[in-house]
Structures are given as structure tokens and as C-alpha cells.
Length: 317
Image (cartoon, rainbow, N blue to C red; front, side):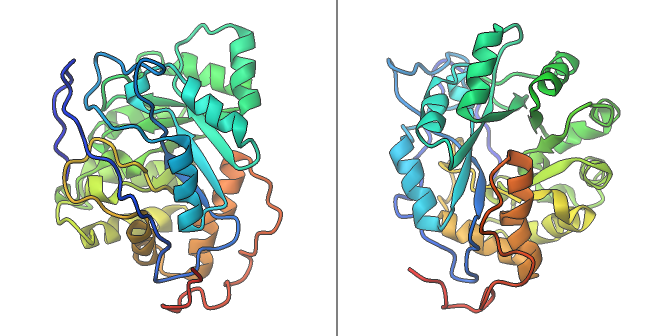
């Protein structure tokens, strides 16, 4: 569901993820698969939490994150700077640096960083910047043009955590951006608003015209709860709009969520409903993500359907 407590220095604690992530049961994860959205989180004092945060999460260590990727069959991952650490990207950068071939990162930074700091971010594996207007600790859209110019200079893209209801007003600005951009969790859009909602239709139009979208956050958008069947028609429309610009993310460790705690394997199983065709689904998990985040394409086998990709019970342990 979508309850979001107000930002406060006494931000409510949220639970951690399912400690036993598993692979999907409905399809075989293809070689080279990428989880394009997850976070690492540490506790103070080594990595302080911002005072204006909207929630207080437990630690999500790099070791736990990498174990999640292994357990779910993900060859690669993309770390997104979490809002509770504000613009202190140090934990994310440490994790990227230690896993340079496997991971990429999306940073949250203030404008005006020295060139040497920008270069260090890029060397670590940062490939984009996130603007977040939904949770305390994020960076908003007030300086969108400046961030777009910086991203263009660095060869990066932009990523937006935004409510789709704001997209009709934002679309003219977004359509003029000089860099690619990605919309998180398909606009953090509650399914109760319906497919005809202007915000969702604006998102579909943006995706059709060149935007990327993360097929992620089902539990944030669903109003029906597990297994999130009410999200299926929305995700299918977005994939139909631009199958080559859809990527998948687990959103691990599922911060700011106080309802049923899903398993990453269950979210992957939902992808079988969102993108039923095995070849198209493999491209979402591999080719599309490799192209956007700059992973080496060696070894991918998405030109044809992976063997037994849709046969239940054939997933190796």
C-alpha cells in the first residue's frame, strides 16, 4: 500500500526485507540478468541518517545485498542512493568500487561538486543522478535544467522518483531534456486511479516518446495487496509502449513499507505476468538494462527464448 508517514526527526522505523530471498518459480532467470534498483544502508555514526528523513530503516549491508543478488540469480545490480543518507554517497561508492564489474550506481548529489569528486563517482561506476520529490533526504526538481546539463557533461542519465499525478505538468520540461531519463516504480502510481488517469497516460506518452521506465515497486502501487494482480494491466501497457526501454528492479530492501513483506522471488514471478513473452522478458532483464547502465553484453542469450524459460519447476537451485 502507499501509506507515507510525514517527514520528521523521529521518523518511524520500517522493517527489513525477507531474510531468505529466492529465485522465481515461474521462469528461469536469464544469464546476465540485472536488478536495476536496490539500496545499501548503514547505521550511524559511520554513515549518518539525515534528520529530515521520512522513515528509519534497519541496515542493509553490502554483504546482504550481494547475497540477495546471488540468491535470486542476478548477474548484475544497480544501487540507487537511498534518501535517508541524503547526498552522502560514500557507502554506495564503497560498494561499487569493491564490485566494479558487477555493479553500477545512481547518485544523489548537490550541484557544484568539484570536478575531482565527479570524476571519482564516475570511476566508481556511477552512471546517473536521481531526483527524488517523494521522500525526505532527496533532491527535487527545482534545478532540473542544471542537473540535466551536468548529466550530459558526465555522460550520465537522470532518474526520477515522482508521483505520476505530477507528470502532466512536468512532461513539457521532461520532453526537452538533453539526456535519457528513467521513471522509478512506474510513477509511484496507485492502481486505484485507473488506467485512464491523466498522470498514468502522461507516463505512457513519455515512455512511448523516449523515456525509460522501471517495472518495479508493485507493492507500492498495488491497492489490492499480494500477489499484486491489479498492477498487471498497467505494467503491460508500459511495456507495450516501449519494450526496449523497460527495465526491472527489486527495490530491495523495500524501505518505507509497513505492510506485507514480499520476497524478491515473488516479485520476479510477477514479472511473468507483466511481460508474459519469455524473449521480451529476458530483454527487460538483460539487454535493456545492459544498454542503459553500461554493462558488458558478453554471454547474453536473449535473441531467442532461453530453454524452458516458462516451464514451472525447472528453475535450478
